[in-house]
Length: 298
Ligand code: NAD
Image (cartoon, rainbow, N blue to C red; front, top):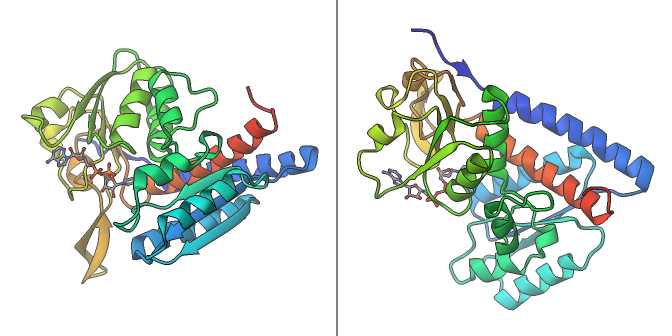
């Protein structure tokens, strides 16, 4: 059996970031506009700190105006909302991101829905969700993780997924559901599986495209997967792993990479797959927002 292609998300993300950096320089030179990204982080969740640092570094390397607002874990809801309103009306800011999860006392819906849809580069606002579901993505923001997955799928199979069966495992609002909408828009026949799905291996067996977004280490096995399928692993799980002959905490996905790699046509690794693409898509959304605000995009 031949080994599957390892889809190098890190290299693809680097390419994308390079082209965003070039377009950003052109936007500044020709129109005097610098895309601005504001990241709001509340509390000290260690994983969130790492994500925010990576987003900020990438924004700076793209040549963006990048600001970070770090609020204490006990920040009051009116103060968070006031900050979002202030960023909504700041012309130097084109993208606003509130890093999730939020401390328990804060209302995630109220806060994410307070972000202006035109600056909602995470694509969580109901207006953007509605536009995506309706297939009207010309001026909508698509959530970054599924958008990145879609680029990787289309790089493997082509833009038109007519006749392809896609199975998305997971039905969250930030990954599973928007992923299903994007696949449907590209003409795939889409099944969304979740924790209540019966016979998940049987459902996955029919898929030419599998997207796993569950949060269960190494759940998807080779004997679930159709030979030649494209398998995209969104999961990020912290597990004990043998690294350089020592037991250490490391990251693993929802897909058993080595096992599935014996059957699939192409698989994304974790780390180095979906994660870096997610950050690049955030930059792409922010650049697009700046261009849309200036009337430079349809
Ligand atoms: P979530 O917890 O909101 O959703 C998980 C989904 O998995 C649910 O819809 C649930 O029904 C389904 N599920 C749970 N157990 C199942 C089972 N046994 N069989 C089938 N389905 C099952 O999670 P999420 O926010 O969608 O994230 C999913 C994973 O992706 C997590 O590991 C998360 O860390 C990761 N993630 C990665 C990125 C990235 O950039 N790489 C971005 C977002 C999320």
